Image (cartoon, rainbow, N blue to C red):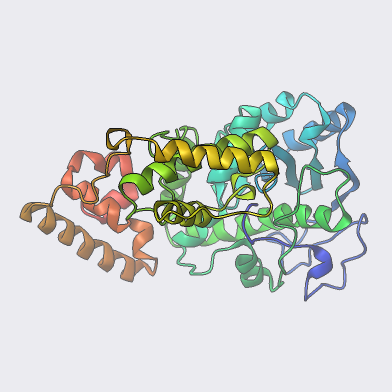
Length: 395
């Protein structure tokens, strides 16, 4: 997981008496299990790094219809993130697969693709797995979608584990460098816990979805999530430099900011570091504004070579003529017609009423921007919303 969800067993503030030390069997208390007979155990191995170990894992996956999965990447430590760890949880145990060991992971990906994959907030993980392993699941169970359909306001992994199992999970190794080997015991425990509770959590959520008659809605949303994650998000080179907070920058300042953004991107790629390791976005903006006032900020962490290239980039941007400055982006789209406004207002009223009756967040049925887009072009409804959402809006 890439946010503040998950933790380590060592940091749990509540423990069941059945829990034992790391690398031994870890039994989920009966109150956690959807089925009292289930026993989920940690694998006694550390990372599954050899071809033989991966081959042993495949039969275990094949005999289960549902598999919990999570990923860890190194996006905070390199220019192009890569898959560094793949967590797999089954009723037979929790397993950590090492994608950096040089093994062919195609058999594993192909086996997982035929299963229902349980993920928490699936979009990032599915995109990472598709890029790394050409993986796309046949079926998905996203516990975030399930929780939101059930009206949960707190739907982080930690919040759901506490709500359903009474276990508080502290923050763990979110910002760790997952490309390093060996992993520390704390990192291993953090990684295992990211999938450890997903299977019993999915069972509990599924029961509630059935009880409330929303399982079909859930399946529609999960199917859309699979499709959406398979679509590449292409970066527009002409727009990528317009970082957050730069909306009011115009003219020469915009030219300087654009030049600095591209220089930073080249520097980050050159040294295989995230771009913010070179300069943060706010520093780019501050520099562009300062240079336009005749000042040149100095950064102590720059090497002599980087400082020269930095100044040369600024000088080149200052030498541009007005014709070469970035075009000012239109801040406002065409003003909506009265008919569009009436259509949007009618949809919002239906949405809010449905949300109140169902006790779910209105934005989960349809965000405001989506409603406005459909009011402007009714044909976009099928692209932007799944059938249950369209039905609640009267479309």
